[in-house]
Image (cartoon, rainbow, N blue to C red; front, side, top):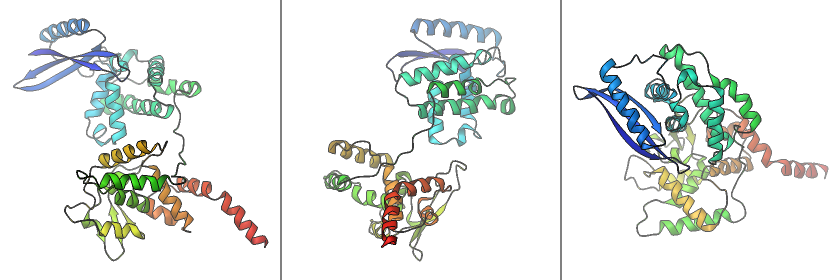
Length: 359
């Protein structure tokens, strides 16, 4: 039996949309579902009623019927495919889900053009999304469109993203993210530690913010990695820990790496109470949120938790470690990123060495 439901949704820019979902159930299981989004509820009801009648009369449509397939239909296939969307990282999955709520999802696949891609990017830019963020939309959408024929047998060979990309670059709507070189300066780190200590001393606080922040810097780990390391992964002899599934753009899983816990990082880990299988059994988002609240309260501008990873790498360089040795701690597969950190640190030191050599 076919039926429809309507959900009211507010977009990021405040505009309201009405998504009408038409479904068919058999023996209590949903065997078919499609949806469209409208600016007015009345239009959603009209389409839903009409579509229900069509389905009752004609039955479930051919899923590969190009005449009726929307961009959103292909997005859903990709997202629900265990070998594609099922293996997507958090960022990619977020972007794909977001695209389902955008106007382009309601365009017929056969009519989808470079103009639609550019209009989408214009709209995203007008809501405050930067070029690197919009570039994610474009890249992941291109992956979905490229899967149509080889993966799903859909006779669709055109990928308008390829045509739109050079123009989008020319218009400045997409681009690479700017490399950050931010480190805590002056007394910023001392103020942060004092603020986090005060937050940690609160009666209701359970997170050892100061220990985690110092450990993050000394170990050069991402906060998500810090909150996942286990006591079982500690190597007492080598004073190291196995960091599982370390981020790698070329490989999504299985990137386990033995990371040395240098200096105080080892001591900080060892002094944590063994109340869980995890060394730091806390939600990484809660740790980041606490850091952000203290940072904002102190009026420290444009310092992100991830910048502490760069701070840790910079300290290792300043202590005399080579790029290859630092990579063993940070987990960088490509040394280019660390080389840029290194070269940004050392113009002044090279002048100092030159002056010493002249004496």
